[in-house]
Length: 169
Image (cartoon, rainbow, N blue to C red):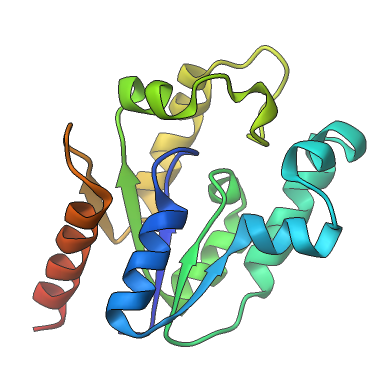
C-alpha cells in the first residue's frame, strides 16, 4: 500500500479515522483542512466568509493537486472531491476510500453547519450538498466503506484495514 486517501461528506469521520489508521498502520497523517487552516492562519469558515467560497475551493484544489507523499493517510476536506485536478493527483498517489455515512447520521453529527466551514453556496442544504458530491465520491473511490448505525470509529477503522488487507492479498 502506498497512500490511503479518505473522502466523504463533512462529519463522516475522515479526520478521526485518518488518525486511527495512521497509528495502526504506521503511516504519516495529513488532514487537508488543517493544512489549509494553518497555511492561511485562519479557520475554514473565516476563509469562506472573508475571501469567498471561490477562493477557498481554489485553495483546496491547489493543495490537493500539489500533494506528493508516500505511506500517508490523507483525510481530505469534504469539498476536495469537487476538483478534478486534485482528485486525479490523489488517485495517482494511492487508494481512495469513500466513507459513506447516511444523511440522517450526518445531520446528527453536524448539527448547525453554518459555522463549520462547509463549502457551500448560501441556502444550500445538507441534502443539496450530498446530492452534488455523492456521485463524485463514488466516481473517484476505489473502496466504499458504508457506515452502519451504531458502528464506532474503531469498528469502521477495522473494516477499512480488513478491506485493504484483502485487496493486497
